[in-house]
Every structure is written in C-alpha cells, then in structure tokens.
Amino acid sequence: RIMEELPKSGYVLQGSVVLLPRCGEVVLTSGKTFVVVDSLSGKIAKVVDEGEPGYETVGLYAKKKKIIRLTSKQVLLPGFVDGHAHGPQHAFSGNGLDLPLLDWLKTYTFPAESAFSDVNHARKVYEAAVARHLRNGSTTVSYFGTIHVQGTLALVDICRNAGQRAHVGKVCMDTNAPSYYIETSAKQSASDT
Image 1: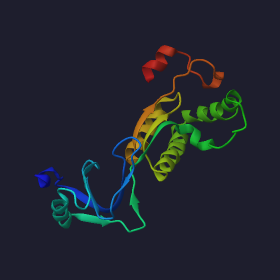
Image 2 (image 1 turned 45 degrees about the vertical axis):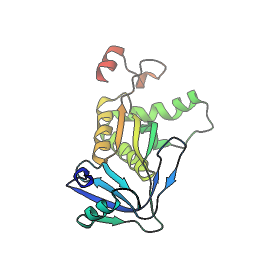
Image 3 (image 1 turned 135 degrees about the horizontal axis):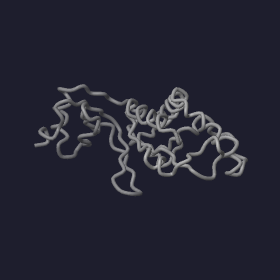
Image 4 (image 1 turned 135 degrees about the vertical axis):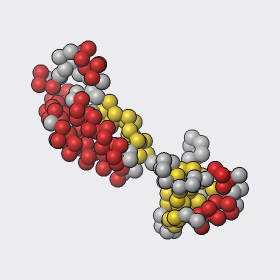
C-alpha cells in the first residue's frame, strides 16, 4: 500500500533530517532517513526513518529513482517562514537604526519606496530580496510591496519564478506620508489591491 502512495515522478533524499512533530519538540533522525519528493509539485510525499514501517518499501522505490545522499555533515531542515517582510526595504536594510520610526520613514522608507513606480527598479530590488530570503532558508514569506501595483505584481512573479511560497500585498496609504508617496483615493487604492 505504501508504494501506491509514492509519486510516479519523484526523487529521494537520504540522510539526517530535523523534524518538528509538535510545538516545542525537535527530532534529529538517523542519517538513513528517506524523504520522498514529488517532482511535479515539489511537495514532500513521505518521510520514513530506519526501523519505521514502510522503510524497506521506500528503499525499493529509491533504487528506481534519483537518490540524493546527504553527507554526514549535512542535515535537511524545514524551511523558515517570515511572516512580515517589507520587500522594498531590502535595499536599505540595516540603515538608520538609531533613528526614531517617523524619522526613519521620512529619511529612508518613503524616498526609497517612491522609486518603485519604476518597475525595472522594483524588479532589481525584489529579485535581490527574494534571493536573500531563500539563501537564508525562508521558503515562505509574507511580503509587503509598495503603493505601486505593477511593482508589487513584479514581486509576485519573482516569488513564483524563484519557487518561493509567498503572500504579497500592495501597501495602501492615503495619509501620514509625504505628498510624493501617497495615494489620493482610498477607493482606488482598495480597488487596486
């Protein structure tokens, strides 16, 4: 029955895996754990460790598929989730940390984000932001874009093309911002979103 649950188009990773079965519990498996990945969806179809039911069956499956064996110095980790990331702020991250929030917004955020009306500029910054998140292990991110629809849609495309799961939102701002970076109609802003 286990063989029927395994994807026809798949590959297998074998090695040590960090599992998080319950809140507060971390398990490091043996270096012989099989992780079966569905090649079409990219989703994990099965994780089975040595001595568990189905281990031998997955081992037979693995012999017929591409198998990637991790070294003893490698560990497979779950992806991180970043629940609050401002994509445009990647360009100036780490700057102005000594400033109060409103001064920081006026000095860095509003001028930088206003430049995202240029979709090519937005793409360049968003590509770097998404690449950095992925390099650091964030496989799922909730991104805030800017008030610019096309630039925010570019972020959606970049996430999709990079294979990163993402929730992307256009910022709605019709108050508390400089005149060069504000939406004049709350109704239009909501409609664009």
